[in-house]
Image (cartoon, helix red, strand yellow):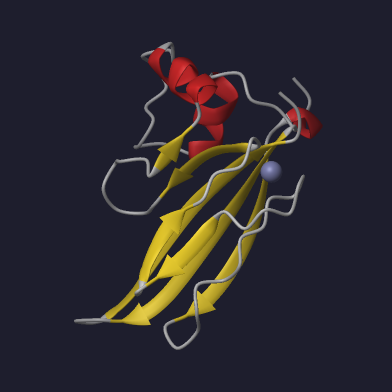
Length: 124
Ligand SMILES: [Zn+2]
């Protein structure tokens, strides 16, 4: 498999005195994360594949196709403990998958960084 056929990751950064950045679908420009009362809510479009916040191993959103692929994932490719790109390749995604890595740096009980992953597919 050539390197070009792997999913593409695009980093985005914001800091704690900024609003959550507008995450627009690269296909239809739908805004998929809507912040209401300080809480980020998912507003899906047909191209949204998954929304995986940092921290707990829980997806805020996953498409039917994505959850089927996850269920059929090979056991020897851990989903949460290794390079996430390797996992996406192992479940059959290629360059049609586009992933925003939304990195947030802030100050809580100490400096911290979290990274949310938001995936889109450019065709079904
Ligand atoms: Zn879309």
